[in-house]
Image (spheres, rainbow, N blue to C red):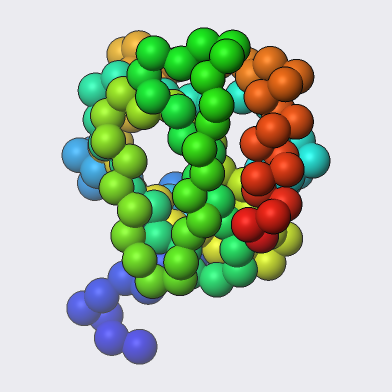
Length: 139
Protein backbone atom coordinates (compact mmCIF):
# COMPACT_ATOMS: atom_id res chain seq x y z
CA UNK A 1 0.00 0.00 0.00
CA UNK A 2 1.16 3.49 -0.81
CA UNK A 3 2.46 5.76 1.91
CA UNK A 4 0.83 8.63 0.03
CA UNK A 5 -2.74 7.95 1.19
CA UNK A 6 -4.63 6.90 4.29
CA UNK A 7 -7.06 4.00 4.03
CA UNK A 8 -9.79 4.33 6.63
CA UNK A 9 -12.35 1.73 7.66
CA UNK A 10 -14.44 0.58 10.58
CA UNK A 11 -15.96 -2.85 11.11
CA UNK A 12 -17.22 -2.59 14.70
CA UNK A 13 -20.73 -1.94 15.99
CA UNK A 14 -22.00 1.63 16.07
CA UNK A 15 -20.10 4.75 15.01
CA UNK A 16 -16.45 5.51 14.49
CA UNK A 17 -15.14 8.93 13.49
CA UNK A 18 -12.67 7.73 10.87
CA UNK A 19 -11.43 11.17 9.77
CA UNK A 20 -11.48 14.58 11.43
CA UNK A 21 -9.42 17.49 10.11
CA UNK A 22 -10.88 19.96 12.61
CA UNK A 23 -13.25 21.42 10.01
CA UNK A 24 -15.21 18.42 8.80
CA UNK A 25 -15.69 14.91 10.04
CA UNK A 26 -16.26 11.60 8.24
CA UNK A 27 -17.80 8.79 10.24
CA UNK A 28 -18.77 5.22 9.48
CA UNK A 29 -21.89 3.96 11.19
CA UNK A 30 -22.68 0.27 11.37
CA UNK A 31 -25.76 -1.27 12.94
CA UNK A 32 -26.17 -0.90 16.68
CA UNK A 33 -29.20 -1.60 18.83
CA UNK A 34 -30.00 2.13 19.13
CA UNK A 35 -30.58 2.29 15.36
CA UNK A 36 -32.65 -0.87 15.06
CA UNK A 37 -36.28 -0.55 13.97
CA UNK A 38 -37.32 -1.94 17.37
CA UNK A 39 -35.70 0.98 19.20
CA UNK A 40 -37.00 4.07 17.39
CA UNK A 41 -37.75 6.71 20.03
CA UNK A 42 -36.27 10.12 19.18
CA UNK A 43 -35.03 12.53 16.54
CA UNK A 44 -32.04 14.87 16.40
CA UNK A 45 -31.64 18.28 14.77
CA UNK A 46 -28.58 20.35 13.83
CA UNK A 47 -29.30 24.07 14.09
CA UNK A 48 -26.24 25.37 12.22
CA UNK A 49 -24.94 22.58 9.95
CA UNK A 50 -26.03 20.32 7.11
CA UNK A 51 -25.12 16.64 7.20
CA UNK A 52 -24.59 14.17 4.35
CA UNK A 53 -25.25 10.42 4.36
CA UNK A 54 -24.19 7.69 1.94
CA UNK A 55 -25.25 4.06 2.22
CA UNK A 56 -22.38 1.71 1.49
CA UNK A 57 -24.10 -1.64 2.13
CA UNK A 58 -27.20 -3.12 3.70
CA UNK A 59 -30.39 -1.12 4.14
CA UNK A 60 -31.13 2.14 5.90
CA UNK A 61 -33.88 4.75 6.18
CA UNK A 62 -33.72 8.35 7.32
CA UNK A 63 -36.56 9.46 9.57
CA UNK A 64 -37.40 13.09 8.84
CA UNK A 65 -39.53 15.91 10.21
CA UNK A 66 -39.59 19.69 9.68
CA UNK A 67 -38.11 22.16 12.18
CA UNK A 68 -41.48 22.98 13.75
CA UNK A 69 -42.41 19.37 14.51
CA UNK A 70 -44.50 18.50 17.53
CA UNK A 71 -46.22 15.41 18.90
CA UNK A 72 -48.77 15.52 16.07
CA UNK A 73 -46.27 15.76 13.19
CA UNK A 74 -46.28 12.79 10.83
CA UNK A 75 -42.71 11.67 10.22
CA UNK A 76 -41.44 10.99 6.72
CA UNK A 77 -39.05 8.21 5.84
CA UNK A 78 -36.44 8.24 3.10
CA UNK A 79 -35.07 4.81 2.19
CA UNK A 80 -31.43 5.19 1.19
CA UNK A 81 -29.97 3.76 -2.01
CA UNK A 82 -26.40 2.48 -2.11
CA UNK A 83 -23.97 4.99 -3.58
CA UNK A 84 -26.24 8.04 -3.47
CA UNK A 85 -25.49 11.02 -1.25
CA UNK A 86 -28.35 12.43 0.79
CA UNK A 87 -27.89 15.99 2.02
CA UNK A 88 -29.85 16.69 5.17
CA UNK A 89 -30.34 20.46 5.38
CA UNK A 90 -29.83 22.41 8.56
CA UNK A 91 -32.92 22.59 10.83
CA UNK A 92 -34.33 19.21 9.78
CA UNK A 93 -35.19 16.66 12.46
CA UNK A 94 -33.75 13.23 11.67
CA UNK A 95 -32.62 9.83 12.79
CA UNK A 96 -31.66 6.72 10.92
CA UNK A 97 -32.68 3.09 11.09
CA UNK A 98 -30.17 0.49 9.93
CA UNK A 99 -30.34 -3.18 8.98
CA UNK A 100 -27.93 -5.49 10.83
CA UNK A 101 -25.67 -5.67 7.75
CA UNK A 102 -25.66 -1.90 7.18
CA UNK A 103 -22.64 0.30 6.64
CA UNK A 104 -23.40 4.02 6.40
CA UNK A 105 -20.95 6.87 5.93
CA UNK A 106 -21.76 10.39 6.98
CA UNK A 107 -20.05 13.75 6.76
CA UNK A 108 -20.66 16.77 8.97
CA UNK A 109 -18.91 19.77 10.44
CA UNK A 110 -16.36 18.66 13.01
CA UNK A 111 -18.13 20.69 15.70
CA UNK A 112 -21.63 19.46 14.85
CA UNK A 113 -22.27 18.22 18.37
CA UNK A 114 -20.89 21.30 20.12
CA UNK A 115 -22.10 24.81 20.97
CA UNK A 116 -25.81 23.99 21.07
CA UNK A 117 -25.91 22.84 17.44
CA UNK A 118 -27.59 19.51 18.25
CA UNK A 119 -30.86 18.94 20.06
CA UNK A 120 -32.92 15.79 20.64
CA UNK A 121 -36.67 15.28 20.87
CA UNK A 122 -38.53 12.20 22.05
CA UNK A 123 -41.29 10.88 19.82
CA UNK A 124 -44.80 10.17 21.03
CA UNK A 125 -46.02 6.56 21.18
CA UNK A 126 -48.30 7.28 18.18
CA UNK A 127 -45.37 8.67 16.15
CA UNK A 128 -43.22 5.66 17.04
CA UNK A 129 -45.94 3.22 16.00
CA UNK A 130 -46.60 5.00 12.69
CA UNK A 131 -42.97 5.43 11.68
CA UNK A 132 -42.07 1.87 12.70
CA UNK A 133 -44.72 0.54 10.32
CA UNK A 134 -43.36 2.74 7.50
CA UNK A 135 -39.77 1.62 8.10
CA UNK A 136 -40.70 -2.08 8.20
CA UNK A 137 -42.53 -1.70 4.89
CA UNK A 138 -39.55 0.08 3.30
CA UNK A 139 -36.81 -2.21 4.56
